[in-house]
Amino acid sequence: MANEKDSPTMNVDTEAARPAPVSHDSHEGLPSSKDRDEAIAMVGEQEHAIDPTVAARAVRKIDLFLIPAMIFGYGIVYYDKAILGSAVLFGMTTDLHLTLTDRSTTPPTVDTSRLSWATSLFYFGMLAGLYPMSFALQRFDIGRVLGAIVILWGGICMLTAAVTSYQGLYVQRFALGFVESIVPTGFMCIVSGFYTQREQALRQSWWFSSTGLFTILGGGLNYGFAQIKGGGLQSWQYIYLLAGVLTVAFGGFCFAMPNSPVTAWFLTEEERFAAVERLREGQTGVRCTKIKMAQVWESLRDLKTYLVFVMMASAYTMNGAVSGFGPLIVSTFGWNTLHSIVFQFPLGGLCFIVILLTGYLGSKIPNIRLLMLILTCLPVIAGCAIIWKSEWSYRAAAPVVGYSITGFFGGTVSLIITVGMSNVAGHTKKSFMAATIFAAYCVGNIVGPQLVKSQTKAQHYPMLWLGLIICYIICIVASAALYIVLWLANKKKAEAPEDETERAKLAFQDLTDMQNPYFRYVL
Image (tube, rainbow, N blue to C red; front, side, top):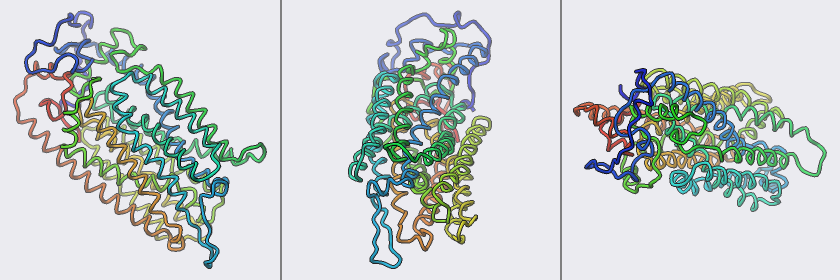
């Protein structure tokens, strides 16, 4: 299939192949130059053979610059929002009155609704910021916007240590979610603009794998902070100060982020040309700064948008419960505070491995992404059932095992990101899809904590585990429906006659996947 090709394989001098500067506005029926992809100014409308050695060298340099930074950046995002689950074990619930104990009942019951809302308000803030932040990154310089917002995020994170009430924490969590919304959507669009459809599966999984990696690293850091007994602050305050400092450091780096391979300062001129030209085959484009409302309306009419939304919202309900309440739930199995943190390690490790494995397989084997997505849902369902129905005796092993294997959800979510972003074209539509994916992410994270009803602890939180099982069944059904939709769309496109000259011309016109007859969907 055309979309699985990475680049032409002829070996010629790119200087000789480079087109002379020409005016592209004379082509009838095509957008004006300001409406097109910025790549067209570099490589023009005709296909050019490139040296595969140069292209491979450019990809290695892009990987070395982008991937470690994105792993670290999204790792901080995940650590920053997940540390609330550990901080509550270090006195935060008491200091900020996040739980209420009703001693009129026998035994006394604990109301965790304030903690649930503190967890959920972060995602309400992110939901509010997703679309404006995504379009700001498209319209303005990526490095400047991303760097400034990330530094602001670091400052807000550090201010958590100054919060003295649950109302103050509510405000802080909303503001934190609003500014953090810029990172995941920005990363998704960056990957889609630097890499081919085939390469995106692995690269999207690399940065998202920090979900698992930082579950382990964050757990280790939190375990260390638990040993701090002196000083003028509580352990949970030190955790937020560290997260804020790391975030500000990352924000400084973000100012060096290029807008696209066209302006990648760490590549030579020859490498930039190859890095852009090799993206022509996939028809996904590089970058267009004009926000096109026609592409927004198309997104709203596109069934794919809604299926991906449903898939992400249902899959990420798991994280909403685990990140905010995971350590607290494990502590009910008879393990102490430190043991509860340590048990995040196997979950995080499995999550990390599954994300990278599915990303690798998706980049090597054509059209298995949706199949893998469905398969990764099954262990999550099994894990929820094990936790729910097993014996919660003192230090019972079964619920901990079930808790650990729910780490497969990381692979599910990573594949949803990959499938969603590799199956849209047109920069405004890409930005809309990226924001929509994480809007669904927010919905899942808002719903998840609300499923944890402390009053049902003796019954093993039945609403939580049954709700998660239902969510993953919904995810499976929506994934199967998306497979059919994409397969039928590819079949219809394949019936149309193909013109290689027209294919090359349309690649960087900032057309959407539905407008471009040569775009092919990956399954």
